[in-house]
Amino acid sequence: MKRITLILIAAVFAFAGSAAAKDWKKIRMCTEGAYPPFNYTTPDGKLAGFDVDIANALCDYLKVECTWQTQAWDGTIPGLLARKYDASIASMSITEERKKKVAFTDKYYTTPAKFAAHESFLTRVIEGKLGKLKIGVQRETIHDRFASAMWGKKADIVRYGTQDEVFLDMKSGRLDLALADSVAISDGFLKLKGNEKFQFVGPSFNDPKWFGNGAGIAIHKSNQDLVELFNKAIAGIRANGTYKKIQDKYFDFDVYGE
Image (cartoon, rainbow, N blue to C red; front, side):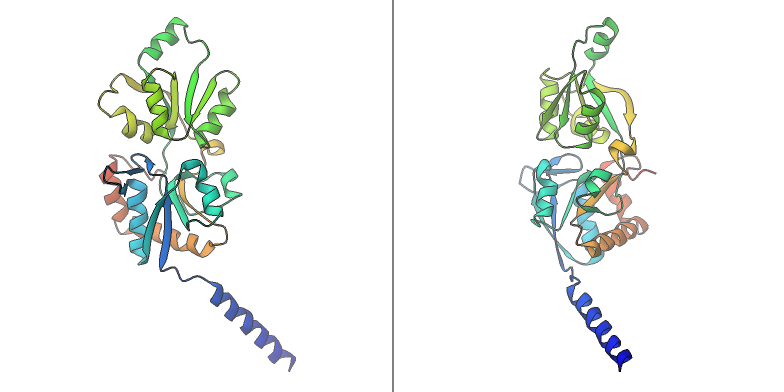
């Protein structure tokens, strides 16, 4: 009798667990929509970019419906914790600090950070006419934290709501340097008409302590089943060639990294 009772209890818990597991037929996706070429909003109001194409490919692979919404960068994790959406794909680096708040999928790309400046900056370096530097970063990013930790006592760290605002102030001469993802700088600024006198300066930065282990999809910690589904899909689109097709649409190098 005791053995039968234990079997019945186990069966009840197994049923309860299966009933609690969510059937993911629709996934509410979120992105910033202001970080080209990874995510941006087209003139006709549509979301586009590498992040968006990758997410849509993942949903196609899983045969689920993706719905989209935008969220200002510094509200991304709070919005996820408040369950305004199920997953955020917004070039968010997988760092230990963020993993305390949210879960992450495996990475879907890795690129280093770099500085950019006007070409006259090098002349000022040579002539010793720098003064106290102004470094522009997007607020609440890995670049913000890195710049603040490394140079916060020697330079003015100027924080902005979007990466475009950083670039606008650098172009207007209100900043000496901008620190950001190297691809965001290259494709979102250096390659644009009128910015020919700006260039990368200094080394690349990719220390996992500050920059994490690639960009992943952020998900509420309670939805580990969704993490596993996306991990399966990331591996799937890399294996079937879909990832490379999307990558080649935006980049002429292996954006996935090592």
